[in-house]
Every structure is written in C-alpha cells, then in structure tokens.
Image 1 (cartoon, helix red, strand yellow):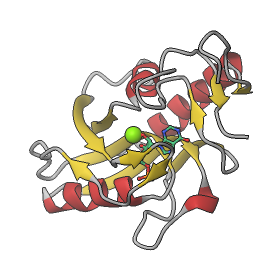
Image 2: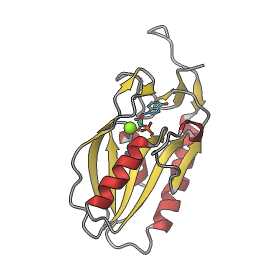
Image 3: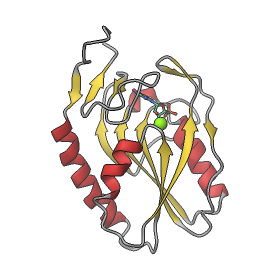
Image 4: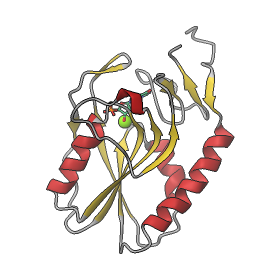
Length: 177
Ligand code: IMP
Ligand code: MG
C-alpha cells in the first residue's frame, strides 16, 4: 500500500451508522430484563464501535468498563496466544463483551471464560464484524449480536488497525486482496 493512498472501501460509513443504530435497538431489547448491565469493551480495536454503540443504548444504569486484549499478531495472522488484562469485579452482573471483530474466536473465548471466572451472572458477546470462515478450535463459535458478516479479508478502519495504522478511517476498508 502506498503511504498516500487509501485502501478500498468494503463497508462505507453511512452503512455502518445505519447498522449500529439497529444494533443499539437490538441490544437495548436484549438487555430489557437485566438490571445494571455491564458493557466490557475489548481495547483497542473496539473503541470507535463501542463509543457509537453506547450512545444508542439510553440506559442510565449502564456500567462501562474497558480491558485490553492483545492477540500477538504477526502482520495479519493471529499467533493463537491471547493476553488479557485482569477482569474488573463482575460478580452477579449481566455482562456484554463488545469487540470489533470475531476472527479466530480465540480472544473472545478467552474473555468469555475470564468473565465467567469473575462470577458474571451472564455473558453475551456483541461484535461489529464476523469472519466465520476463520474460526480455530477452541475459539468462540458465535456471537449473540453481529453487525456484519464479512469474507476472509483483512480489514481496517472504524477502529481496526494494521500495526497501529488506519484506525481513524470512517469506513471499513480492505488491506488484503
Ligand atoms: P481473534 O482472532 O478472533 O482472536 O481476533 C482477535 C483480534 O484480532 C480482534 O479483536 C482484532 O483486534 C484483531 N483482528 C482480527 N481480524 C482483523 C482484521 O481483519 N483487521 C484488523 N484486526 C483484526
Ligand atoms: Mg481487538
């Protein structure tokens, strides 16, 4: 990729905004029966998605927490080894894990196990993107709420990066052919 050129758009910003509107409604409906739900955002990739999503929930009793997850990627490939910061106190809470993308599923499987080990009452998973063809054994198979299912392409923008670049793009773009 030439440093001045922008990568091709896969999902434009207006389509993302419409889908995040709908996801806000879907998640609000799912959380209707839960008192004081806790949204646990996996950083760094989910920071743009989560900031748009939470402003569509209109829940005064929502608690928002962040944990950093790294999956040690060599370029565009996951090494399969996931590092996760310690969980906050989740005792008895209805937890929603929010991430940018469900790829091999190893990060979200690790985060879900850690949330249950911290005594969460329930754990649901909400992701903007899902690449189902990439799952590995031991990875989370499916999320309760998915924005877009995409093919096996490496994507950047709307918070997703490649080696620290491209997070600021308003569209979701493809780096791999
Ligand atoms: P996992 O392979 O499901 O464990 O995904 C772990 C993390 O890798 C995701 O939360 C993303 O931050 C990152 N990731 C996976 N696929 C992509 C991609 O296509 N673009 C940018 N980051 C990705
Ligand atoms: Mg991530």
